[in-house]
Length: 175
Image (tube, rainbow, N blue to C red; front, side, top):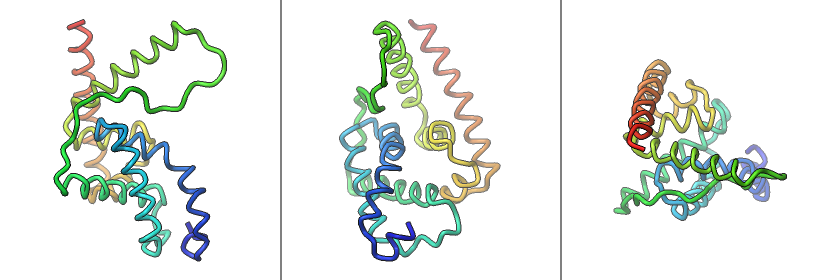
């Protein structure tokens, strides 16, 4: 980021390559729209370029980046866009190497089952769960980003996990 701040704009491509997948995953989980997720990732990096001088290096770059991501998403919906409810076909990179097709099908089914369950959570619970559990952000960084204290984030994650467990149990029983 220091290189970008010093005018070396080609360094943004390194940041893009490093963070595009986790941003895409965040947006895909939050919006349930993979095409919108791609657009929002692009918008984040446009803002990173535009507001690069605002990064002071006091916190983690990842937390600053996700703050921008949240603002990009909020701005998108503030302009009147509606969330779609279609499920995401697949947003993760392809598995490398040889694998058993049966195992791949089972893994995809489990992944889809989990994504459906996560999508049933309220947006605020879904957001903290995705940031902490899927993107492995520190509670401290998420708290700073969401403008709340760390213990509140921990409680929200705990409650989101409990609700997710109930959703998963209910869904399994209805199968």
